[in-house]
Image (tube, rainbow, N blue to C red; front, top):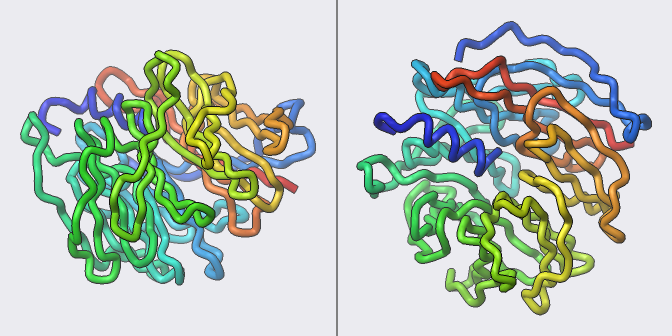
Amino acid sequence: MRGSFPSIKALYSALLMTALTAPTVFAQQPAASSAASSLVERQLGDGLYELAFIPGQNKLYVASAQSFKDVNGGVIYRLDPTTLALTGETHTDLKNFGMAIDDKGQFFYTTNSLDGGVSKVDTQTGKVVERLFFKGKDKDGDPIGAREILFHNNQLYIGRVTDPGYISIVDAQTMTLKGKIDNVGKWVTGIIYSPTTQRIYAASGSGEIAVINPADNKIEQRWKPDDGHKYLFLNMAEDASTGRLFVTDNSEGKTTLVFDERSGKVIKRLPGDALGIKFNAKRHEIYISQRESKKVIQLDATHLTQKRSWSFNGHPNSLLVSPDGNSLYVTIKQDFNEDNTTKGPDSVARISLN
């Protein structure tokens, strides 16, 4: 955005959270609390954000925005999901952030947040096959950010980072805009679909969850903690077996809230800074990336007690659980310098959960 890269950098570091160096692979010794697990970390490049695992193809894609200083465009990296060896890369003229895969694994979609667009990518080749740019500018005349993305029923639900925030609805096959859901909350930060309630949940920076019926794309309920505190919700994960929704919060309180999906009420708070969160149904575990603490923690989903943790030199950001539930992938970001460069390349880690 014009003259505002520092604020954009800070925004995406909070919400999600180049010259390509020669990649290196090294094994990191797990912390004492996670001695039974192995961890491999690979330095990859600047501006790493979300990941996508392509079932049946043995491919792990990583979205990159590259550098925010003097670098146009980004990269989509393709890695071997076991070794993290680099197997391909696509240089794009736009920066890449969020990721979602279609039901058949033929295409994945990546948001181009700074340009207010979304790209459709062939999973076989890694090539961008189609794009859609949204109309609309913010108060500075820049494109309204397109952040998190959900694929559901052949449609893309894309959260828009503005106030009031909204969700753009896109036909995933034709890449045409079908409509939008207005007044979702300040900055739409996270979107997931619950197969249990058959509802879409959208988190916002105004500290509420919008409950959306995808049959008519109407907001049916708005869940709030209602405790008098301010919240900045980020990401969500659902334990469908118990009807609990886990929501990370980046406000001063630094906590993860647990909502009862039946009542919409907060039933528990998990203290500690929290950014990314994933639920692993196979192992009945929850994983949370702690950007400030430079850790990823593993919780028993029944008792919500910590089982293990993994420490990093950088800041853990986005998380992804492999389809078989045996691996956890993490993007690890470096600190920014004052000129919007980083102190080193970002990394990807694979944690073996067995």
